[in-house]
Amino acid sequence: MSTLAVILIATAAGSVLSLLLAAALAFSARPSWIPVLVSYAIGALLGASLLEVLPEAVEMGGDIKTVGQAVLGGILIFFLLEKLVLWRHCHDAVCEAHGSQGHSHDHGRSGAMIMVGDTFHNFVDGIIIAGAFIADFRLGVVTTMAIIAHEIPQEIGDFLILLHSGYARTRALLLNFLSGVATLVGALIGYYALSMLQGWTPVLLGLAGASMLYVAMSDLIPGLHKRAEIGATLQQLALIGLGIGSVALIGYFLDHGH
Image 1 (cartoon, helix red, strand yellow):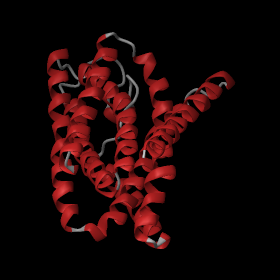
Image 2: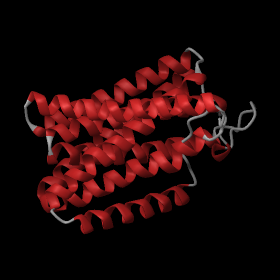
Image 3: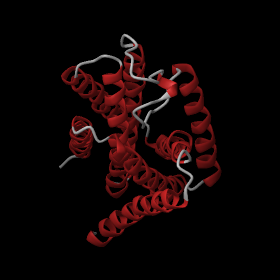
Image 4: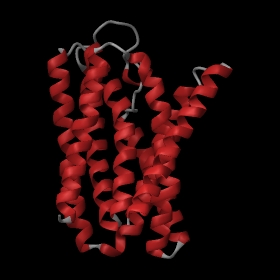
């Protein structure tokens, strides 16, 4: 099977899986599951970035300073993008950044904003997945898993915000599906662009690692601090550890399989 076919299957499967799971949870009205999923996603993102993506970038490029510069630049880029789009990932049913406090509809304004941001983020995810698979099949699998782990709570949050904005459930589901198509577009563009620019793969992996770190530490971790009691903290640590352990375990089995 060609690398392009693997990339397309991984991105399509990841988009469909995260959307179906998010829809199932959202239709079941179980937003209380979101904090649990977010904690796991944090661990998966941190583990994928620090245990797999960034070490692979250093191994491929042989220059840790260049990779470090790519990570630093990536963090600044993602910070500026968030400022420009005026949108943050939302993982709770009520989100100040999306203007969805309370239960009144906002005539679709926050829903439209979240679709713009989500579509762009899915596009970037597609490029990241393509770059990971081009670098190494093992890295592609781990990266796809981490992105799926993050997409599930994000899709649930997005879905709930669309409902708060006055969208019907079926329309909200359709909009999330169309937004997910951007992942495939990003994967195709990433594959053809990176196939011609192999020397830039370590830099892209550095940016991918920065994206994962930024999402985990800027968008997800602050939300966990809303529950400071010891029991919630221990649960969050355990789930973060489970996310990290999942990445390490997948990496081990992929290595063992070869």
